[in-house]
Amino acid sequence: MTDQNLQMNTNKDNKSDVLSIKDLRVHYAVRDGFHKKSLKAVNGIDLHIGAGECLGLVGESGCGKSTLAAAIMGLVPLTSGSIQIDGQDSQKLSVQDPLAQARNVQMVFQDPFASLNPRRSVRETLSAPLRLHGIKDRHEVEKRITDILDKVGMKADAADRWPHEFSGGQRQRLCIARALIVKPKLLVCDEPVSALDVSIRAQIINLLLDLKDELGISLLMISHDLGVVEHMSDRIAVMYLGRIVEEGIWSDLFTNPLHPYTQALIASIPDPLAPSDKQSRITGEAPSPLNPPLGCAFNPRCQYAFDACRTGDIPPFFTQNGVETHHARCLLLDPNHKQ
Ligand code: SF4
Image 1 (tube, rainbow, N blue to C red):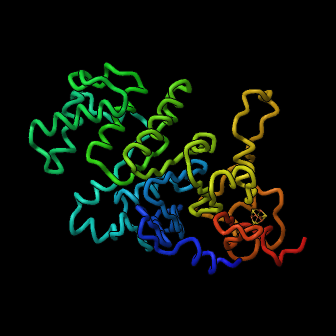
Image 2: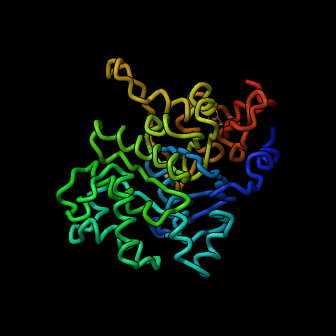
Image 3: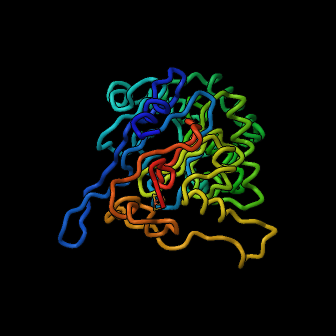
């Protein structure tokens, strides 16, 4: 199947999509020595997330995941392309009604220690977004605070305490509460467990999953670790050097990874039973987005690379065995490819 046909099958407008991204580009002009260059942090991304769905977005640090999150949050200008949130164009909405945009999408950040103002009590932290969105009635504010604390597994008396009194996991629960208190449709979680103790991570992931089901919200779960998104995502998109290189339903992607990069990411998920010297790692450095390789961006690190990978255009998406919900940008999948 060609790239063009895939666009028709995977990116058609779906009225129930909470997030719909079309051909999104976020480029920055930077100086490289005496020259001005364009850093293509996000370079032609199409994605969608349905109502109540969790999309896992994985890739190494520097691949553009956080820039994509910032673009969805309206924190960086788009070079081209569009983002629709709940059917509304985010750029138009940010001009017409910036608060509506902020109400529809909220974010949970990586570091719960840096995310909470140490000079604000939990009550002040949780009431600030409500007041910003015009909810000022004291009883309503108190009710919302008590309800959301209960939903994230905290006692009501936490409202009278201060951030330094809580552990990392509890602080992340408070950050999740602050994000959800305005009842967003989409929660963007950027590495929400990577700063936490391993023993706490599963609790926070399970909490996010429970909240997704209970509140009917959609989740964009961003991580450098495929193992983190494995058990919580309905679909997974793999990002490399500013582009999606593979996307599919999580079970398809794990049982039959199509792209060599995804195969390497899966092989590098730590296996507690394997000796550490026998565990797989992705070798080599990711190329600089200022100087991307010709052809497939993964070719300098790919053990299967052949001439066409280094000289041609960026590979389009291909499917395998007609499974249209699972596709990857790899020339090995090209039905015309001959080794
Ligand atoms: Fe490897 Fe070529 Fe496929 Fe890129 S297109 S992943 S270099 S085989």
